[in-house]
Length: 349
Image (cartoon, rainbow, N blue to C red; front, side, top):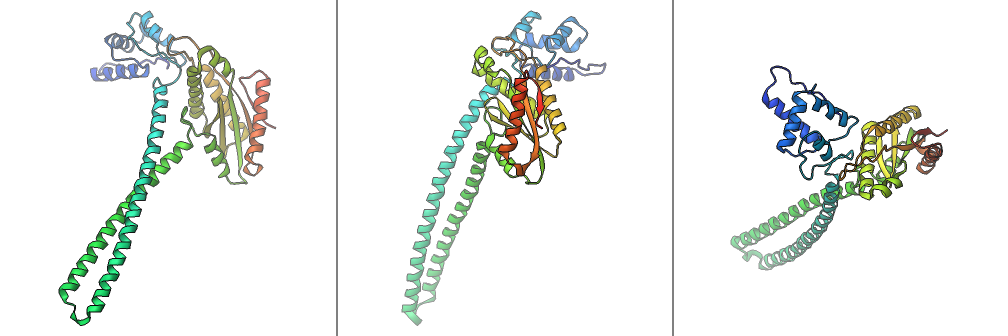
């Protein structure tokens, strides 16, 4: 991120500067090492100084400081200090955590289903036993006739009340388990509609959103495809390719006021409602330009990845035209953008 001059006017407290230094370290993913703290202190307390100016030049365009940058500035880089690839340094760990969470969710749902089945079987058996016992008690009272005592009736009544209370408790447990199962299934349903790499809606979610539209409503769709993505994977590896995908996803989500979905691979689909073709194309083009301004680097080595851009095709129509037909028109516009040199947005006629 670009280095900004921090306001430390007369009267600012030490606590305020301390908080600003903490924010600086967090923004650049730096550990609270004394050398890093000293660097941050110099940058923030002397905005006109040489170090602050060099940091501003290095971080211009959204770049975080790397281990090499810190060393060149005279500081000592802590082993493991990250370098910028345009995304949060914890994104890869988050993917692993998401997969583990999904597995745990499935396991929890299966356990709840088993528990719910046991509860219902027990409740059914209890109800059957209660029904038979109630029938026997009624027969005994009927056979005893006037000879039945109030004590006997009281015992039978107490027994029936106890059985009813146990049945109610089991049914209440079944109700609670049903509610928990419904929540777990809702979570699983949401996970099934989310792309784990980018945290965007996936193709299934996009298609469902399109199907739910008013058939007569005018809508605009866009398809964006990262340019020369295979070259990124070949030159830097698939882990860096994944980070580039996340970076583009983050930029599209930040710049476009619409549903943004990962449609597959390095391709994204956008669904605009109540937005003209021209306005939708303007938002997509703004996101494309913003992406080209980012300075992406390989986190492990600090090597520049180069400019990352995408091509886009935009088409306007109605939901009644059908998703496949409308997306095909946007796709044709996308291929024209690719054929005409890439890194541009073209609208369908």
